[in-house]
Length: 254
Image (cartoon, rainbow, N blue to C red; front, side):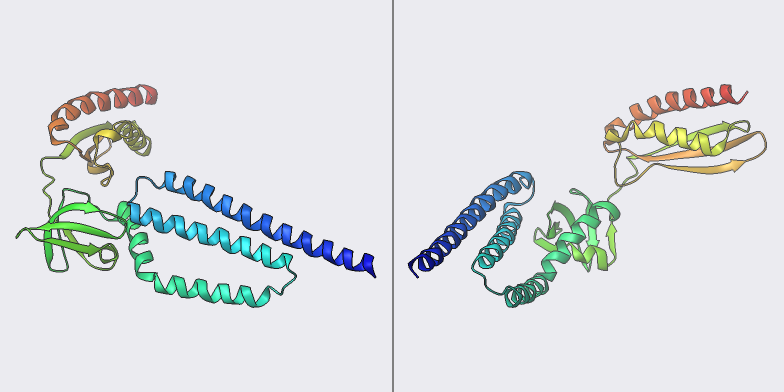
């Protein structure tokens, strides 16, 4: 009888010790991963980084508590159901924030807007002074500040009124008829890619065929320079490089 009570007592002590160890490790892991995530998210706004760290910490604690509850021999089914319901409620409550964050990602790829551009959207117009993960801030003509949710740029029509005439660069290209046009185009775009640091990344280079006959193809390479002051220098350098590439292709075609 005594030995049975000692065995039960030992089992209880082991369970409590395991429970305490799980909670302690959960605390350490949550702090460690939180510090790592905060360092990784240093470039983004602090408020957004804090929310991400809190979400990660909550996720780690949920896993730790599930393991701890399992050590007590309790049924996890009800707890799992409650967690799923809570997770769905959290996503629904934060749908507007998530929509703006996701829209910021799409803006960087599909919507040509950057700080300094003059923008018009939803009846508002002004100069873009900040683009964060939730909203785009514009300085309006009357000096007031307008905050536009990023989701607006995905749903509504926006007009970028920034003049790009001083940054547009069009280089005429003449390709001999003996040269494969697809290969010539690929080589030209490969050449331009080497100068991507000097170009506006929102507008990829475009090669357009203007005229074509049996002897040659007349085309045009359109680029958008990031700095207008480098436009002429870049034009001269690219013109020389393009001629070298085409001469090489013509030599190989002979």
